[in-house]
Image 1 (cartoon, rainbow, N blue to C red):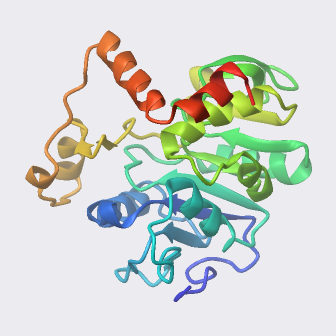
Image 2 (cartoon, rainbow, N blue to C red):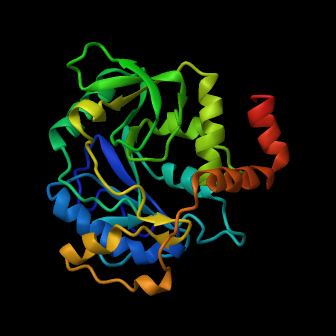
Length: 277
């Protein structure tokens, strides 16, 4: 790494903000960090931007992982994430992606509470911090006033790439080097169904999310149509024409597209979905 992780953050911080990205999304980096400063102005943790070969030189407080800089072939999504986690030495990591453009103030009180919960209970492997993660089912955690719910073992998207706290070793244990991000969520969830790991999430239905953003700013390489208004509000200028805007497919066609993606690697899909291993 060309930068140290404690730049711009406390060396004793309990977590590192890992912004998972790739070099093809460099146009998102400035807007992401501009909005981070607006909606979380007092963040004081180490920040690691996961890049392939690029170095983000705009800010001294953001380290660039450059995980692919000395490897001839291009690493997979999971290989890049595995390598980035290897650069983190804090007890926890706060996972986000470069297109999670914040649009409301971060609830720092509840974030601190989630961090304290994980530091105080080694059994907790993950706490989701948005309304976009697991679809449940859930059950109350400890009591109705705790602010957290337990993600049950057979929950949809038990493994999610939405904003959340992770123990680095737990996240690593679910990653398969051959998988893309969407495969990690689908197949990782199947793997999580067979394990007893304790996963929680904030009770967003009752209390709202800790991190709020449009789900998600970039869809299949194109801008979400809600993003221009947010950027105009904050005087953020990008060339939207370079990516264009995503037009969502009707429900049945989205399912068909997912099926086609699964069939792109039929052996893996068969092992994970049919053999469940």
